[in-house]
Length: 165
Image 1 (cartoon, rainbow, N blue to C red):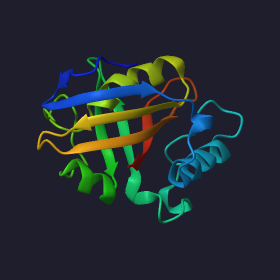
Image 2: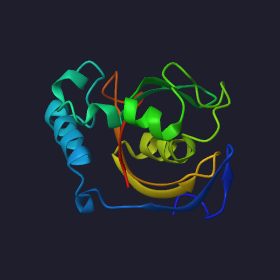
Image 3: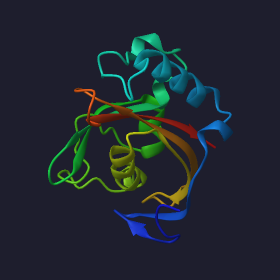
Image 4: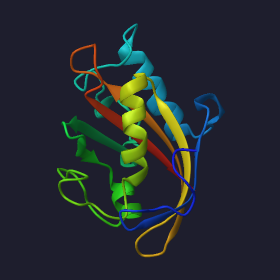
């Protein structure tokens, strides 16, 4: 578990947040994004952003994708791309926004916990999160976070693909 049930993070409340095995995820959205990521990374631990082209994904996947650039220290992340279905669920457009610097509330709290782990391990990370939004709407999201690297040494960004239930 990445953080305790009931934690109130940035205005939203988590009910459950579990690490899941990527092999156990059967979402075609997540599988498609992961297959593309694996294809373009080749034998590197992560592809560059230029190699991970949204245009090469099935059009049905793109609305469920976000791309973030990692900044710091202190650690922050800026959404470079925020898919339309993620905008719909989040209830806000976050393209160009930085999580901490712009005081985003109600979305991104699971990324704030998972991104540092992904940066440290240099590996994809998957979670299943049940949460209440700041508007008290309940969501369940299976999420896969895939590292990006501008220098083939460090994680400098991430692609996140969501499957909402």
